[in-house]
Length: 326
Image (tube, rainbow, N blue to C red):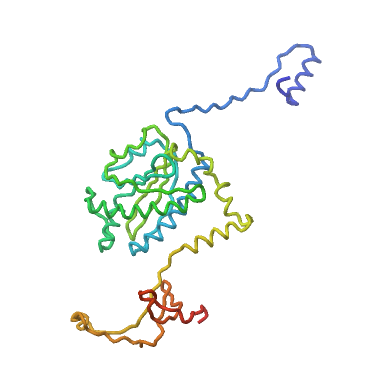
């Protein structure tokens, strides 16, 4: 038999055979199969697992880039991932409002480019901050000048450099900023019906807030789409994986850059003396030639050192280490 009868159907069948009246036996309703229509104009290329992995990648990118911007702009900056979804390139392009800050990034070694769309509000705030302002945005949007585009290009290059580390868990890439477009019509890098993954980040610089979108075409990352899953992502960060996670963290810490400054001495002068300082004037300090200089790592005094010369350059020699308990 193609189907298994329920106990109720068996009882009815035996009852009908015993009575001999040949009554029709009520059959259980057949469940309708759910058919999901396939949209050829908008095919699904990215799965939920792959979009989730992209969020993890750009979450790491957010932490790295926010730390960089905080130091570069000298103001509090925060970046966080808002969402990830798959859309057509036409939908993404139509959502852009001119003027835009659209960075075209060569995603080497893969064939093709990805796009980075930065809110013009954030762009104006960064330019104002770089030029010595408080980081305020413009009340009314306008076209970017050539000088402003050059300044934005420098920042976008720093953003692109910070894509390498988050993607290294999936594959090794060497992205490069090709150019910046301020008009979305000049950034037609693919057919409008091509599917892309759109990862949206929220960026806040001081009191100014805006969005940053990464448009990643499926045809560009198709060779590594299979690696975009959490199992592959965490395979090298498993605590039981022969210490690979520990080695990875140690390597990242070894390459981290930290600011070091040497305090030669301190003094106090009046505003009048400061205004009238001339070339050749001598300012007495509270230290001596034989004194040990304080060496700061960030804002923490960590070493004492003596001044000197090494290979024709000014240098210091560490004389003692300041322990935490001291």
